[in-house]
Image 1 (tube, rainbow, N blue to C red):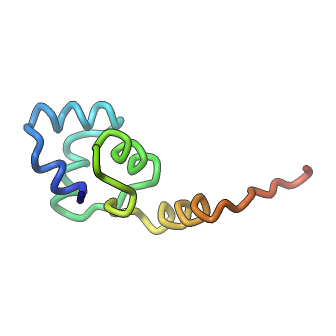
Image 2 (cartoon, rainbow, N blue to C red; image 1 turned 180 degrees about the vertical axis):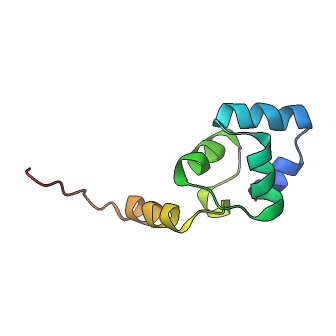
Length: 83
């Protein structure tokens, strides 16, 4: 399910509650839905967890967030200096 479909099915009070639980504002979520605003991976993860049927594939990720998701999905180990 697209995030937009899920979001538009909510009442205004439900949208406010979703925004609060996700740590953002209804205005930001409106920008995601109506203006195609891209979001970072942390917010996308929160929205996926809070919206049944929505996946990261449905979220408009920033370029950086898409790269982070690709690394996460690849299972690559993080190399730290001095280890």
